[in-house]
Image (cartoon, rainbow, N blue to C red; front, side):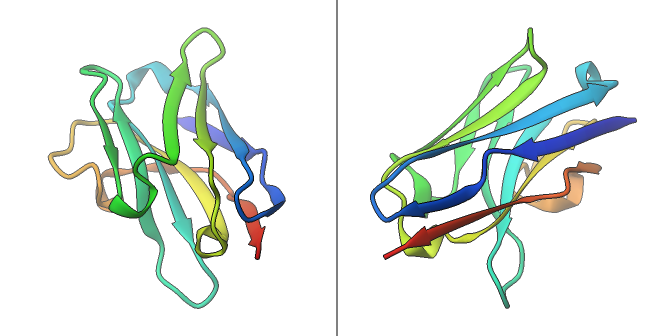
Length: 125
């Protein structure tokens, strides 16, 4: 079992930055992929970014490339999402997730077994 707890969300003006954190506990060392997903009000949850902790490969959805950066601190067992140049369309609840097994589709939430409770990010125009 892996427990994930997100923090760092809040209200920020367009163009600003936020850093989300996801603290992991339990058998976190057994995960292959760590990811961030988001869900805007009235929309389906969507993929944002993921990292393969074995190969260190990273994946980003096109709308956040060059603005968001995923990283992980093994010593602290914490996943981060640095978000810069935020836009109003980035407003959503952000969830971190962990996949305990390899998945050929890290952009799909299907392979992610463990989820955090979510943290709200609101970007004002």
